[in-house]
Length: 128
Image 1 (tube, rainbow, N blue to C red):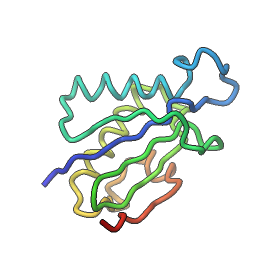
Image 2: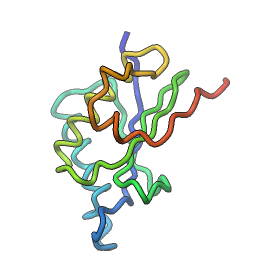
Image 3: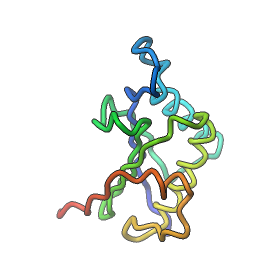
Image 4: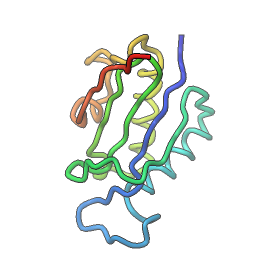
């Protein structure tokens, strides 16, 4: 069964050398916009995309996270080197795989390459 997943997107993330302003031109904000557009186009009912002002992973921009009740939470980075629409497609694919698991643990062989190399943290489900 596919369950809902929240994709958190650090909208303040900047690619190396990117200007501070305008904030909506930063790599994280562009990825957020691309995710919203791709999810709408794909009709991805299993995702909620939430902008986050800062995820404090500035050394690994652009950062996103997957979370869902009762599942492990994952934080991924390094999406800045790809075009936002390419990253959005990879992230939505990963989110669908995450949503289809019972515990949030996507088998290694089934993960998109960007999620294999970009993993930053894995947090256990919170106790209710």
